[in-house]
Image (tube, rainbow, N blue to C red; front, side, top):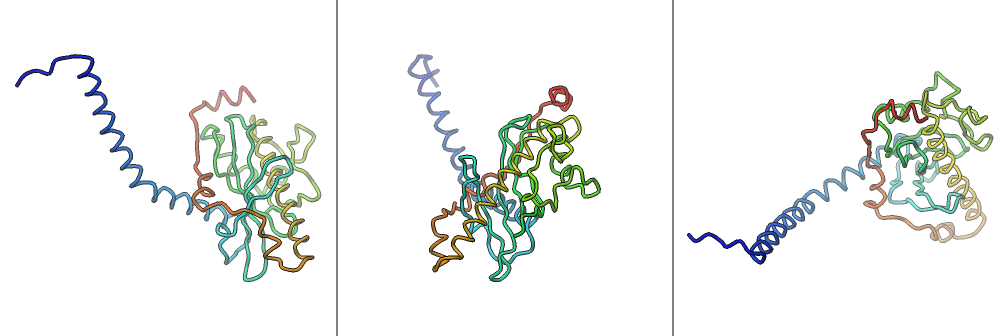
Length: 241
């Protein structure tokens, strides 16, 4: 068998063929895995919502809508209902000012301005710090750091180092500030939600009054739940913060 002559044309054709085959294979893999990944993300979101609001029997994801957060942006609101009664809201919040970049959370509120719970959806902190963010502000044995049960109509959350009411994570003031910023954004959306409900309740046709809120499709809503931890060293953050 004659050896293929090494020319620019032959090299180009060989490279093109290899790239084409690889692209086709990658497309097939993506097609096969896209649905399971989307289902896993949706399940993770559903679990996060159940974790942060009182028990409900509706489908908050199907009834989700966007609302302004008071800072020129909009956040996703997931209403939780028990029968015909509204029992709370799960609301997304975020900050781009964490040590590692963006942190995204979901905060649950009851109907009386109180935080029921929160869940960290994604962050770019070190694994050690990421684990602290998940638990630090839930520690009911330490009221100076715990945000669970706080009535945000009476206090805006900020770290004690800034004259506020919450003890920051040890050696991680930057990330603590970012986390509380995300919580405060979620509460701003909550207040707008409550105000909107009060307005619609005073008019006829509650469903029509609420129809201005747009609902994302489930796949897009769920896409925020991917946990992204980088490999910065913990010592590096502690030094920086």
